[in-house]
Length: 203
Ligand code: MN
Image (cartoon, rainbow, N blue to C red; front, side, top):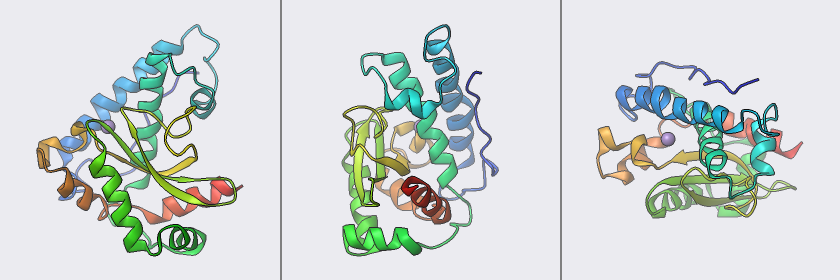
């Protein structure tokens, strides 16, 4: 069965003023849709067809650029839409709060370090919060559409939160001001989903 473009679960304008409607619509219907179509085309008729996206990425031949780029793009945007919410749902709490405090000292220090990872990614890519077996969390960044679960990429853990810092994610509204976009991201983050992903990654 082919991969399909997921619904966002909120309207394109729901994240305004932090992320504008036109950016959201183009990002979803053009960029994410293209990754989805190109991924399906790249795996059609190969032994990757029918496998889960996580299975494909975890065991990826990193020289397979069409699947690396489009499979990564498909997976990364699925995660990105999921962790956004217009009401900035939830607070950092529970086991994830403990893990973040242990790794970074405080929620504020975590946010600073995550923002710095997003800011220092040169060109296109992502900032990530990843979980390792046992529950330890760390921050990393990947270029292009690489995913931390790919062989030899990033922190190598399970990504539970990602921020897209490709210019297509912010340029219409913020132009070159990536820092403003990164700051705005914290206003539309759904901590509840990140926490659920943390708990799921421990199982
Ligand atoms: Mn993107």
